[in-house]
Image (cartoon, rainbow, N blue to C red):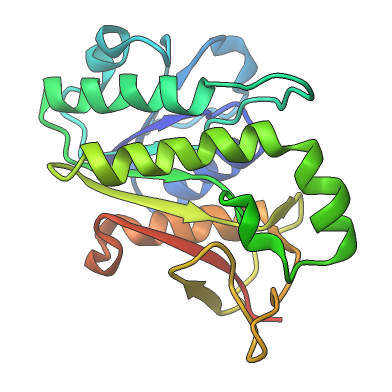
Length: 221
């Protein structure tokens, strides 16, 4: 496939670009600074783009089969953020301009922060309050896709805490909820490899099970 990747210079994005090339895809990486992406490949094109501008994105979406977003925006302790919703509005606008129908993006477990009541003390009382601005904006982006984007074939992937560890061949566990529960309803893990998140995101490109779905994922322990 011909795939446009946003957030390609981030830790998850670089992993995803590498795997997409290994899978045989043609990749266009849309970045703010082309010098930050050090990967070189004959099927990789790196271009500068503004993720908040539909027109800027549309220039590079034409002729693509799918868009994958690994964009991330830093949390703010005492104020809200809007990067996820602002960028997704631009992405959707560019997709509609250019006729690209398939999009995969990532958020996180617990985007509805009330869903964390069974999480560990650390996650529930320390981590989630710290990153609440990020989770809230991710949740707003998810709701935007559900309510406003029924014309597009989108998938939202929710992973738990991300680790910089190698890709595995472990079974991917999924759940259409805010986390993946064990048999007692408790979160089955707290972490996943970024490389395994990338592996799953790429696998959804041709998987109709996740059309217009939001899916939590992790790996079997």
